[in-house]
Length: 422
Image (cartoon, rainbow, N blue to C red; front, side, top):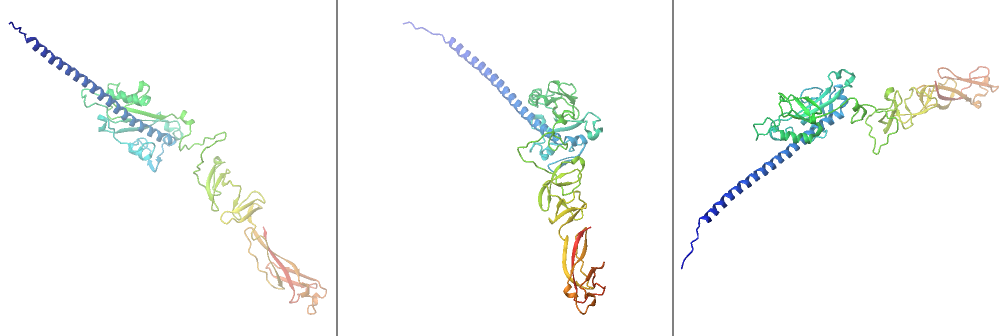
């Protein structure tokens, strides 16, 4: 019986080819995984760069709000006060033209607990540079700096570099993602070989690199307002009078902050201005009539003896509510005016002088004499029933008969005292 023999060499060659193919497959898979990992890592770096750009933009918006609210003060070169924090005007760090992130947090202009240091790669070694400018040069010499445009920028104070790529001067990938996030307000010092210029997105604007040494890789965001167009808009804490020529309708309430007192002096420029105050214990509104503030409730207030303009006009004393009337250009009180007393006085008696209010003079007249008391046998001067009575300048009463003789001791004159307007 003949046996067939099968050679095993080809089988060994087949097993060898399988190992090579497996090794090649593993290499390809590793390369794909490495590529995917690098792609994922780069995408994550891009997200982190965009997030860092968003923080830069928040700081930019906060600085812009500060300028927006205090535009006039920046034009005039005045200190800035907000939320109990004052920035003295100046160009040193911490002053009005160089606020810090910490100060923007405290000023409450839209920034809350923002870190003073960035977190992205090489930026973590530094912070932010904030600068506000008055432009063009020399504009501050105009009245109150009104011809100044107020501009500014916020920059990272370190260049963007990738520690993993030490052979590259700047991290162009991260800068590109940041500029895309910042839009037209973003710029970087990457196009200049020496880094001396920050070029805006698309080359639309440029500024000198403000960071010491002017290194390439600095990213900035700009803000600002022009004095011409911006002057047409009202803003928070605006000190200008808009002088609207028509009615103004408010859906909410009106918060009047100015406080005055009655008769407080105002200027002709303030004519019609409404302010709040307290009068006679009552909260009310006051209006400037061109010289003084007066209540708008239609009630006139004055002081006894004070100047008035309209005869017979009524008013009140602020503290007591006492009624006044305008008489001969002065406010006089009706209380204590007119008849004060009536009484009988004998010959030689002195009539008490009544107390009269300001601008009034006491007076006394004899209204009648009791005839039954003065006619009698003991008084020949009264036999005819005639008599006469008077009061001297010293308010002393005299009563005499028709022949001039002094009336009897029982004769009495009815005297009326009063207070008359002088």
